[in-house]
Length: 259
Image 1 (cartoon, helix red, strand yellow):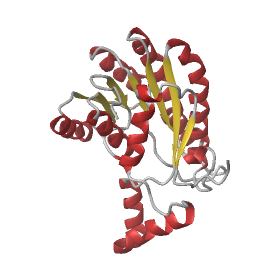
Image 2: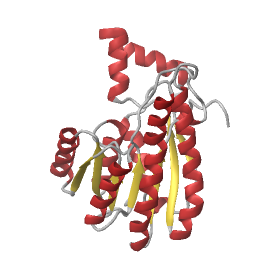
Image 3: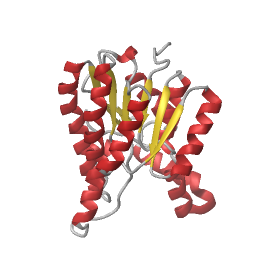
C-alpha cells in the first residue's frame, strides 16, 4: 500500500532511540524526510545519519529539551527552514516511579512540561506551517496508562491522561484547518528501557522476565516490537487514514481490560 508520504516532512520528538527512532525510520521508509529531536546531540545525529544512509531521505536533527519553550522554538525554526512540517509526532517522554504522598511539586511540573506542554507548544506553532501547505497530521503518543494506570507511576499516569485529552481537544480545532489529530496508547512495547530493566532485575534470565510480564498483562502474551507500533503510527499520519480524526487507538495486544 502506498501511504502517499513521499517527500513529506515529519517532525518526531524523542527520536534518538526507542519508539521515536522506530517511528522516524518508518516514515523514512515511506520516502518521508524527518526532523528528529532529542536532548543529546551525538545520539540523535548518529540515528539520523543511519537513516539517511539506509533510506536516502533527508534526516535533520535538533538537539533541544522539549520540556522548555526555548527547546520547542528551536524545533519550530528548524522545521520552517525545511519548508514547514506536514506531520508532527509528539513522542518525547519517560516513565516515573513515586507515590503521590512523596513526590515533590517539582517532579510533577517536570513531567507536565515534558508530556503535555511540549505537545501544546509544538502543535500550535507547527500547525501554522501545516496550514500554509494545505493541511497535515498530528499524533500524540500517550500510553495505556492514560486509561489503565499502573500503581507505581502516578505522575506518568496523570500526565499521559492529560495528553490524551489534549489530543481530543486539539483535534476539534485543527480539523477546521485540514489538520487531523489522533492519539495512540501503546501497551507493552519492547524498547531498550524494558530490556535494561529486565537485565537489572534478572541478569541472564532477562528474557524470561519479559515473558512473565507479557503473560500477566497482555492476552497476546508477548511484547510488541517497536516496528509494529511505528507502522501503525505512520499509517495514522498518512492520507490513507484520512477519516480518522480525534480518535485514540490502543496498540496493546489486548492489555486494556475495559471496552
